Amino acid sequence: MQFSPSDYFTKLKKAEIFPDPERPLEIDLGCGDGSFLIDLAVHFPSKNFLGVERLLGRVRRVCRRSQKEGLQNLKVLRLESSYPLEWLLPDHCASRVHLLFPDPWPKKKHHKRRLVSEEFCTSLVRVLEPNGEFLFKTDHQEYFEESMSVLNSFPSLKETRWDPDSYYPQTDFEKLWAEQGKIIYYARFKSNQ
Image (cartoon, rainbow, N blue to C red; front, side, top):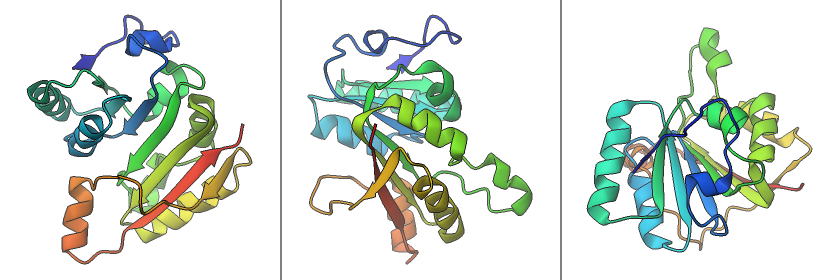
């Protein structure tokens, strides 16, 4: 289901997003066609999942697939990924935030458009619960290295081991890049606030 706040200029309460604010909330920034998000929502029915996606066609596709699956624990917010983190989402609302294969903006003149920055980290820590997790994957080595430098220099985030035994579905991009033999770079951080 598409989620549209009644006011895009006021910070939400968690209960405005899902009726049971006690359930863990996971956020997928740039959820694309929603395959990863839908897989998680099916696998973890006791959690709530919010996808953020700016492209209307993708939002509609996720909503159709979610409805077909009968998922009550998944919603999609149509916005640029940085806006909900900076301005809309409540403080300490998310147990996990996923950023999977974001646009690396490979041209030097476009690097300022990259999502991971000091401002992003500040917003991320505000939105994450204490000990909440940030999970990041990309196939772009230079973007990964730059992002890791930013993330590791941020005092309220601590890098932790990626648990290979926990259930974590692949995105469509990850499947495609893996088939092409590309290296996938990944990192997991915890909020220590």
